Amino acid sequence: MDAKCGALVGSSVALVAALSGFGCSSVAQPARNEDVARQNAPVPACIMPMPVRPTSRGTVKRLRDLQYWELVFPSYDAANRKLPEDALACTGKAVFKDPILEGGTSDRGWPRTIEEPDVLVGSGGDRLKVVWFRTHTFKDGATGGAIALVRSLDENAEAYAVGAYKATTPKPYLGMERMGPEVVITAQDDQCLAVPKGPCETRMTVLVPRNGVLKPMASFLLQKRDFVNGSEPGAPGRIEYRLTASPKFSEEGIKLYEQVLAIDEGGRELRRAELERMYKVAGRDLSESEGSLWPRIFPHKDVPAPAGGKGGAKITVLSSKEAARAAKAMLED
Image (cartoon, rainbow, N blue to C red; front, side, top):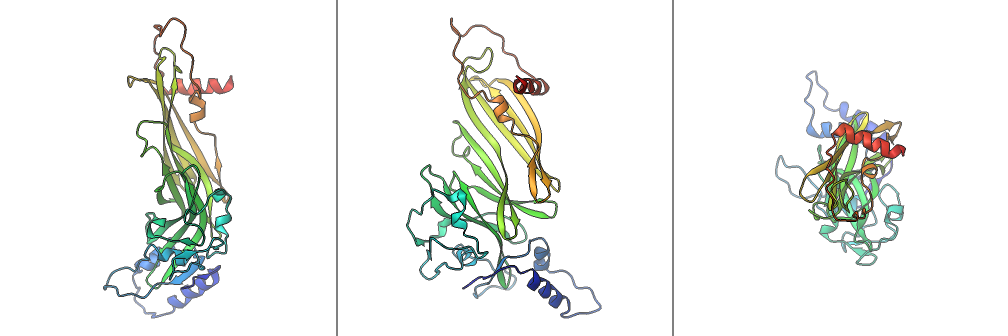
């Protein structure tokens, strides 16, 4: 099956006009779920007829994992499960030439033999799905490939935008948020889930559909953990620094609440700092109000132990306001 690709704004308008004139009556008809779903999604860049297969009455047709390749890559050989190295997305984008995939290779060679686990499908509402096509591997163990916003309807499958994404973990959490009327894609690369005690970080990437392309607009830490020896007064042992962040999406952009804790080997909280910052909508982009709190607090290197042992210096526990003032003073020095 070949995906019908291109800008479909004109055809979508004609379709809506045709539907509005069909079966008119003086009694208002309730909106179908499919109509509501269409209103909540961008204009499709590519359309593919849904495969014909028996369905029970009242069930919704859905693409199987391997069929997503047919929708997004028209040159995909479904019969032999082969994807060429120079495959273009249905939008015409040479997604495998994206700089984010530079240095990656196919561990099965090219044309790549596609297997069902190569696709990771994320959650979404109104039948919208985020689909990540894992085709490239990297020397550091990372995985990359195309990422797309798609949806299955009763008659057609639609792709709205295609981009590229790379993650350090094989199964990042893929989801969707809304910034006002706009749908944005979130990809959460969580190292800390697999590393419960050592240094790790969890990073969220936000991608926005722009003219058929999923464009990365923001990338920030949701969690980070690292260790330094003797970095806090009166606590010469191993100090754990832990960042946690909570994003809130709105029409204005992304508000990010950050907190950094310093904790000694006994589990005592030595220091706390908090920051509220913003990725603000600026035209068709996001503008970062200021950088993360992490580099302002984390000391980056071990502090040599003082001569004569551990000493008896008093541990000072700072309030959030005191820690924020201390962080500001560090920046000014």
